[in-house]
Image 1 (cartoon, rainbow, N blue to C red):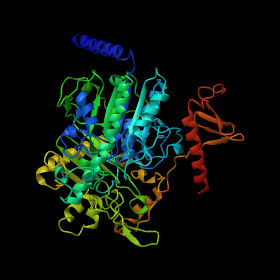
Image 2 (cartoon, rainbow, N blue to C red):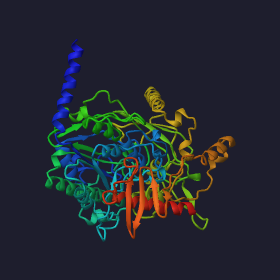
Image 3 (cartoon, one colour):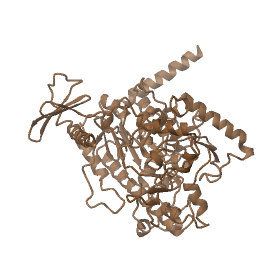
Image 4 (spheres, one colour):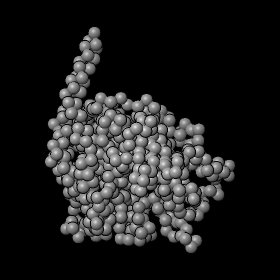
Length: 599
């Protein structure tokens, strides 16, 4: 009977919360920087970065000290956020520059069905070929990138005026509609303007170097260039917050600020180490979330989807179920530090990041991160984690590669190129090995003592039981979540997913000669087995297109009629004005399909 009354009390509390919260449904703003690691906000005490807008959200809400992405690369991480699922569960959307399977429904689609106006500015959930999988808009929503800074503020900064595009988004939505908007900055993605941080007045003396980088003046300067781009992201966030304030929407907006993966430096972005998967995260919502709290629970961006849907009292999908766990109990607690003792670990992984190895092979990793340890399993330690050292240029000559690390072959005085160009220098070589060298199959790091993941403890007998325990925990979870790498039927299926981006030519690596020929034959056969059908807009009539729910018909010179044939099969309501972005996107998809077919 006691449990009955407790249950009734909980249900009444949830009912009261929903009733009081949704007199006006909350807006949602998700701001995501591109390649920013966890310590680099002034709210966390970083002295060479100034982020007043991020700090404002942290002061008014909650800052999470242990927030993680499911993958250290943009496409996989962003897909996980909008799907609430791990990359290994997302088929083609678990690889960069692949198609997006139509059956994978991102949460903005579901919010649109509930009356939310959805959109984004900046990069979107990318890089994917959404249209080839049958989608008519980006998984983040409708694109708002019309307003530009011409010329751009400086080299390395994207010309899109993010805040002005958010203003256009607000102007386009109905006054009584709630919104879900994603501000998806392209900063601080490389390349940076060399020396821009110092030119802006920043001092290299203020830089705190990650443990995996050598201490040189050039590398300190490179970190200041990175910091300046973080501040550009924060500047537009401040402008966006001001717009919300001016329109009286700030207090009714759930605001989430984070990054898609770690910093674009060696041993960080594109690899499942601490600086690759540990990101900033702050969340606020007017006076509904107690502000000024630091939460130490292990959380992930995969948890954002179920958190929002619990707050909005919306059901989660039955098909392609969400794996993330709601953080609502943490957000609406008055506590800080450790709150939810069921959060014992987070999980992450990667497959192919860019075209960086022979036959476009990836570098599959899976990792588990607890409060104290980070354990990594490298499926193919014979491969180069940062990409093969050499590739052929257009003339057939071998040149430096390492293309899974941004700008590593750029021969500039930035950190990535310095480690490659000066790798034979005894002072640089140990750092080069950390960022570019081959790795053993198992790696174990004590994050409390070694956040830079510089000392592998996997072969240390004192840590044998810890390593074995984490290995079991990781592989049990991968089986539970049906990772093809573990449960099959084809562990290498990710290698088969076609990449729709630039290609490179690499020499055959030495390990091929030392591998069972049958395994190589199976691997090469797998590369040709992508059976996912490509979806092109279907041509109808003299000049019309049909794709999914939409039918587009030409009605004159530069005039179109657009119909949602699922909801309006008789085609009685022309939506071309209301959904002009869909019109533009369908025409772009058609033009792209013509190019693909001709090739």
